[in-house]
Amino acid sequence: MVTNGGGLGIVSTDAAREAGLEVVPLADPVHRRLEAVLPPTASLVNPVDLVGDADAARYGNALHAIGPDAADAVIVVLTAQASTDAAGVARAVVGATRGWGIPVVAAFVGGGRVAPGARALEDAGIPCYPFPEPAVKSLAGMATLVARRGRHHDPTRVAVDGDGARRHLARLAAAGRTSLGMLDLLPVLEPAGIPCTSVREAATAEEAAAVARRAERRARRHAIALDVEVEELEAFGC
Image (cartoon, rainbow, N blue to C red; front, side):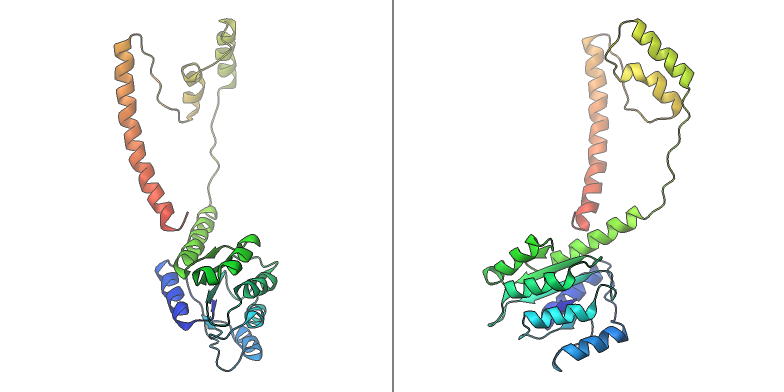
């Protein structure tokens, strides 16, 4: 984390820990590089506090010193000060992080005073938020998504009776069927163990109404399950 306000650095750190992210200490080589380019008043721990008078050059120097190998992601926080050039800081952030292979997000706090900088970051593809908490939430969501994608999934294998399927489809073709529905395909899919939507044929209007009522009850149960999944996704900012 890189910030020009110690208070927002604390807020960012607390939000990160609550979201399950680690705010790791910076390695000694990174610490030495920061020490060489930042004033003595700056804090060189993580978050890196550039102090309130930080200009675009100081942000750029700090990010160059940190580099893309110091952490898995970087949050850049700016709070508006009397002399803040938000657009200049944004350009410095974009230039310093160009080509990085890790996520970079920003929080520019100050409303209209930092709006030009926020727009410049967004135009360059760096997400910028009005407060640190949603920026952290965004990173936590990315981390969760990466973890889920990294899980090993065995490909689903099914055993299809090719000859039986061809005979069944040939019978349908001989009967003049050119458009197939689920009832037509169930004899091919179900023996192969492929999950299918429950399909029932109704001979009368009363039977159709009963089938529809059962389908509605199943749909409601699925909707409840989907609500739970949506809440889980919203928990990490998606």
